[in-house]
Length: 570
Image 1 (cartoon, rainbow, N blue to C red):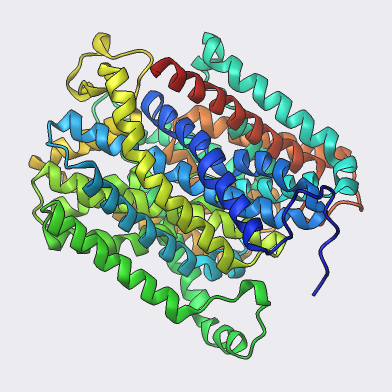
Image 2 (cartoon, one colour):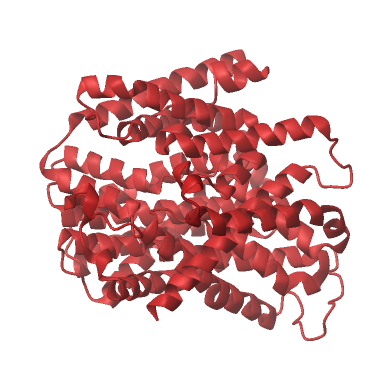
């Protein structure tokens, strides 16, 4: 075992000591976590999506641990793990807003916090359960996870920092300026410009970005057919139907990949039992399964005993988490996109098929999918960072748990704070006309939730048909890819693209898909003109550093907007 480098500053507690972990926990949970949390809540209320907290917290957390030298990357990783969990949970404040739109009575704050805590803890366990599959076996990219790893290595290693500061610093500055300018420039807003989406494209490359654009183009091209089938009306955006097909596409491809993984599972289990895993990777599986079972029971106990929700739909939601934590985890690993609201919608569609007609029950049961899937994918993203750095997984797990505790409290607190300061957030936009919609508070995620919950009295079988069609398409494409093994760019990215990457275009409008593709193509073209430095780690390059910097800069801009919004409230 290597000996940590001497501390640069005497006031820093020794690595591994209680004071060391106390310092990291306080910074992650109580400083950076709430900052990222208010950003997430503000963005969800105003836009309907939020920038993940990993990159932002990793960037700021490195400031605390830089005094430990290169080994400080692990401490910064613990900080970002806790802070990202706080942010992920804080963004779930929109659930309280959805209650207000539906006219549902809000339970006491402590009951809601307890319920969200149980759901979040369950999600942490499921996310860790799938880590060996998605991170160790499939070796998915996880663009933000890679960006965080690059940032932590660069900022805590002085030698590496000197070689990477231009690319990383240039990306951060560009992303910050773009993130602050885009909301104020109508032309950029009209084309849905996004520094973080472009940056993610630079990290993943054209072989993932181009299929995402193809998916977006297919979505637009298929809209007339969807209208003819009665799935959409002409005024609907194509993704209103295409996101269901996209989810099914991921499921179909996952069936193929998981079958192959399970075929190799027994030899892998034998190697793990023989101790072939590195010490930092090892997790006690029995305790993890007990954790999942305990918090799953806690969801049912709190949901039924305190909130009066039917056990059947709570249990169904818990079962669906095991599916969507895997499906969405693959989506995050491929394209940095976590379609958590889509998981919520599909869960409600499934429950409607089983007879659910109460919007309140649909909201609380769907919240299990929403929160658990968000937290589980954050767990996988963080473990991808830890996999690149060699950070002990058990310790990361503990920091994530601490973040869930704080985030559950802040989710309820931020919801009530923002809605008290801005009463317009209480108005149900699903019943407003176009000219009545508030310009600054789009709340697109809440709009999607309430819209599907209001449709519970009108079951739509076509929604399940769209999912089945997507499964068939994803299964067929992935089988062909496994058979042909495409290597040429035209075949791999255009003619027979990855279903995982293709699905991105179904979850978003065409513009974000175009920005992702533009980032990927730009990075690949630049790579052809420059040779990778042999001094950088294998998975680092100037392009990936610049792309990660764009994501971090955009996150800093979102933080500035979120803090400004909070100060305006106060």
